Image (cartoon, rainbow, N blue to C red; front, side):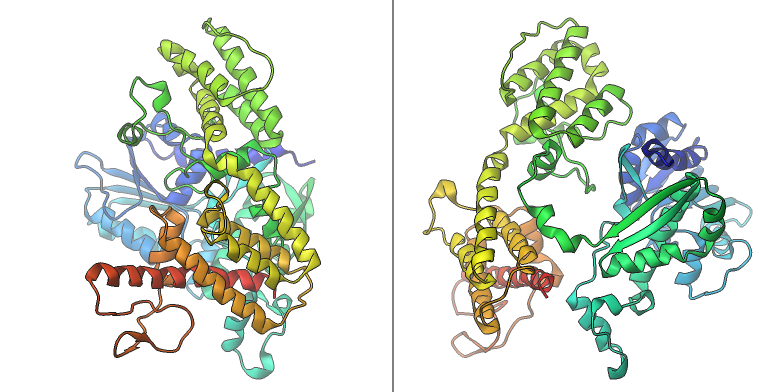
Length: 577
């Protein structure tokens, strides 16, 4: 029988192959591989293995004059931008020995180069080795290129994540329209379930086959023969590709372990992902605290509390943040597993228990208290460790998890959790009693600052999350209203959200993305004399009114905001088709 421990060992064993090659080298690693490494041990494991330095995979980085050996760890194909960055780094350095590890199999490289037949050896990797020697400036220098599946991050023994495939999103009706535009009338698809892998874009095919290859490598490592099940159009394509994977046929004949793998299109249950009905401490930590830079599955823990510095914004930027990943600390790993799987109340009590045990072992003057666990109580326990540098060093991982818990319990987002949950229940009831048009009117009214008290007012991000919930649940609700009426309400909703956006004094990263990302911007619309908008949907991107430069910038911002809100709303509508 396949065990969770066997699966969680797979990423670590793959990274061990990389570590065996990094002695006396400078290592360049891209973001997705770095996130996987983060949950295996982070930069420490490279330095312990003899690496001289660890740097970001960027054209602005290079090796020093006394660093003749380089190791590149990438999650992508060895072509295009990836190859250009490797070339830039080598050109600025003095390397004589280069090793490249890619998480994309050689068979996928052949497909990306339009080679459909299997060839002996690894000709694509061999050609890239020649390029490496050419960029180093001497064909007698040494270059190696290897495939190692580094796609998975072992968050816990029961949970593996694949950061490199974080952008792999299920197909929706907009994709169906896009695919059908390139096909003759007689060969158009009538439904998403009819789409096959060959109809997808080349980039999406490469991503799917890379995921299948990584899964196959994991099953090979664990000697497992799998049964594939799928729920949803894209999941059906992935499961079919894995079931028909040529390299898996021999494995399935002799593998002693059995496992079932279920692929699920997450957009079939987005309400479960954005709803506030969960009672998980980790879910609330991930919702409340800022993401760790360059990561999708970890957060920043403010560590200023464990220093003698005042908690000012400048000091918070100066002190390196903590995180949730503590793979090297056995006590912290045990606590992390409890936080992941237990309900919030039980998990918070477990955090207190670990702090009390650690403080007792260090003979710190802890005052026991029974009853409800509060953020202030946990914080007072954490503060005890400041008096002993040795205690800090021994329990560093535990203290980071405890501080993450404390900061979440204090966070204003947590106070809004129950309010969002209550409104979601009202929306769910309304969807059962009426059509989605009436429910959207309720959401639109929340965007009006005059309609609600300040303390009860929903933030713009909360409104966007509620919209995802409405459209995700709305696909199951009976549509009693007319399509034209719903479009009118959606148009009014875009206007209300845009106005709410203009009132924000500080934009979160998400709101900044909505207003400035290229994909969200409208092109300037022509205007008649006097600044009258020409016919079209939504506010203009830019409207010259003959006013001051500040007024023009405000109108331009409103236009981008409306475009961003509309850009957000379109995919949500596809959920209900």
